Every structure is written in C-alpha cells, then in structure tokens.
Length: 173
Image (tube, rainbow, N blue to C red; front, side, top):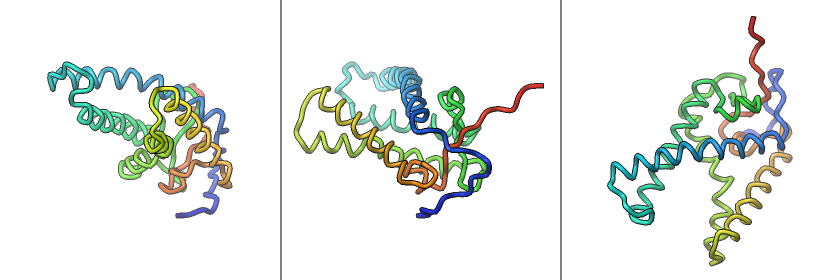
C-alpha cells in the first residue's frame, strides 16, 4: 500500500464536505436503482414477502449496485451524483479506471458501513435508531480518516490506487 502522496496531475482533491454531499445524493439516486432492481427480483423469483428470500435479494442488490458503480467509474469516471458535484475518479497516475480496479474499489468502499453494522450486530441492539446512529457515526469517522492522508483521499482509494479529484467539463464552443 502506497501511503505517499500521489502525483497531483493538476487536479485538486474535492473537500470532504463536498464528497459527503455527493455521497448523500448518490444514496438518493441509488434508491431508484434499488427499487427497480428489487421489483425485477421479486417478479422473477415470485417473491411475495420481503423476508422470504432476503439473502438472495441482498446478494442481487449488491451485484446490481456494483454494476452501477463499475459501469460509471469505467465509462466516464463519474456517476450521476459525481457529475453534479464535479467530482471524478481517476487512477493515481491520472488515467481512467479499469474494471478490475473499479470492482475492487466498490468492494472496499463497503468499509463505510461494515464496521458500524458489525458493531450493531455484536452489541445486540435492535431497532432502526441504533442502526442509523451507528451508520452515521461510522460514515463520519471514515470520512474524517481522509484527513490523515496527505491528499485527503479515502483509504479505499489509497488501497486501490485511485483518487477523487475536482473536475469540471471543458466549456462548450
């Protein structure tokens, strides 16, 4: 794992607040993706109750969300939310991200959630309020960890050799 500052390539890292705003907007957009994917899964599997076949649905949604991110990151370096917030994903060398690296980044990005969810499961707490509180705390702590990196990159990006940069499209002629 390279902990040295990657070459800037003339691109500045977006601020953490802007990346978190993009993160929230991404969640809003993913709500639609998950709804449509869940409907398709339910129709194909004849699922009549949300808890019947729950693990299959979760696996299916994990794959669908992964395909969403990998597609956009490898196509243009930006999801729809990233376009809105002028954030682009590139390699530390400044080039486009390949499928393997994008897939690894997707899997490692679950570190935003897994420690908090594990803590809730191990604590035995029940209900949506403890889960929400743990997730919110986990996301804020994970985002704050970017301050430990010289270029303020998230740790899953450091491991994957990717970086988030501020990027605005060139003006149209």
